[in-house]
Image (cartoon, rainbow, N blue to C red; front, side):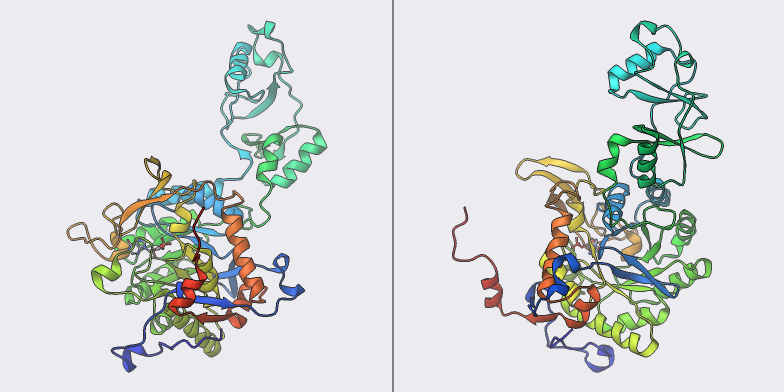
Length: 500
Ligand code: IMP
């Protein structure tokens, strides 16, 4: 990336005090290069390497990772983000049972496959079926041996199979027992084809013993089938990641998580330039070959330390999260643009020396699309965000109606009084000081709404198109980024106009 950035190699030895400023992402702009048919928006791919995985990489279909924060990443967001091609990191500041439950729920979730549908038993009264139809508006029900949604499937009953005057009879008198079913391994689009073939609006999914697992309804298909970019594992289950701290007490958490089966583990520390990171990595790698991301670091040397320790990706950022007060309370941190430039230099040097590419993930202070584009241009392979994701309905945060701001989501940082993430900040309940605040952000609706994530991705692609880049790798190698003066930035914002 051509840029007159200063290098932070060996800062510890060379420069105890540096007078050159560190830069923020918001101070840079991308310069256009000649766009051709090769880099029109329809040709651009946002696919990216999140981390090493064996001899290859674990890829995301979009370069977005939701932050390991209580307010941000839970079941709903993890599913919604995976449907769009990104990944959520479930925080380690929640009890391990809860963290495992979220991972299990996401892994079990299959869009369009409804698990807990209303069922009847052969002995149920038609009267009950009629009142359920009147109450719910549903009119097709599986019939299982014991009437449970996981029972042995015997038939189906629909509103077409009886008339209301038979209300005192029982379900077995009218249920249909010749059934078209599908096995658990069927995908949503295969289920769709089967329903067309069987001319049915309803397909029970059963295991090999004919126990009911779920049901697919044709009417739900259109809204579920449309995720061409979804990020799923080889069993077509959504991908998810989980955080652990470096605290020795978290070893049991690691064991439980490895059982639950996330795709990636993030070793989560506010200051990851430590020997504890490598100890945690060794523990994980002694049990599994799961990819492990280390961090956070903000210097060239910090990257090299984690790369040499064997991490599969490194997360960059300190003191720049939206509600973070680390810089003010402790005086530690660094402008994210400079931190990223140093880490990207270190990554490329490490790659040249060892032939091993270790992706970097920009974390914190990025919620505006122009900052996302600049972060990628600075060398980020992926971007972790809290503020950006918390604003969606699917985030884990509670939603309130605020007197002044309408619908808002509560956003509390991990080192706020509410978050109390002792593991990440190396503190304890005896003595704890805040490094983050609690507040609200406006809620802007669901992630898939066109004006939300799809528009964000389009803006990034549009920036890439102007930079004549087709891939994220292109952005790292070819995109020209320029530091702006205060006046240039002022010109770049709205000026000399009265707003409507
Ligand atoms: P955001 O996207 O600007 O909201 O930043 C989210 C990132 O801030 C997280 O991924 C963490 O790296 C960082 N972070 C979370 N909680 C705290 C905190 O309490 N203090 C400082 N940084 C935090």
